[in-house]
Image 1: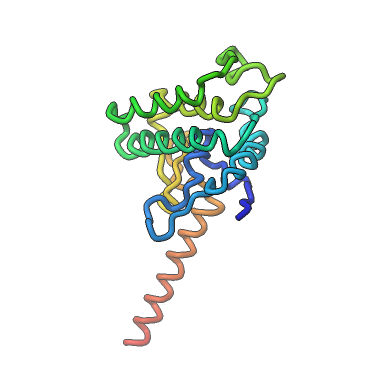
Image 2: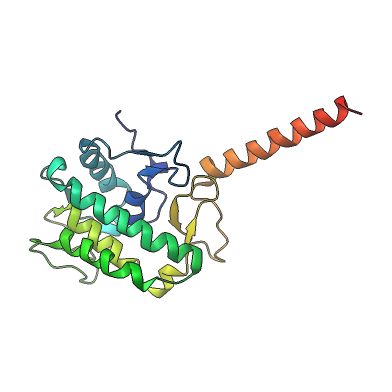
Length: 203
């Protein structure tokens, strides 16, 4: 099924978390599904990320040579990232037991990459040339290891997506207030009315 890669799909705050969030409802085995089940969606996701993550990427465009060929690496980085930083969001610290696998998968994403990153104003390298999606994904994931970023990692209580809370007082609750926040409010409103109606009925 073709996915509409809208702004809501990019509420993680960085490319690596947006990618981790392509598995929907991870905590519910009966309802969970993978938006990258069709590898072609990786290319479509990368194309959308060029717009929604242009600031993080420093204007450098993502390139996907072959979605099918890079899918194993992308999915491995995605799962290692989710495992490491979901724990960090829950505990407030990084589990060293999960670091070796995470670093190994990021290294696979960077293998064969011939570029330079981290220059002032060019966090992902020269914006004049594209960067391989799997390499950019690895760089984005590694950037999350900063102490100030780990402290701001959150898990949305509605959809369980990971996101970075960049609010001034670190009080952001939802990955997307317009979607998850409103859904939770609507759910609470519905249940309150049902309880009130039940109380009246049995009065």
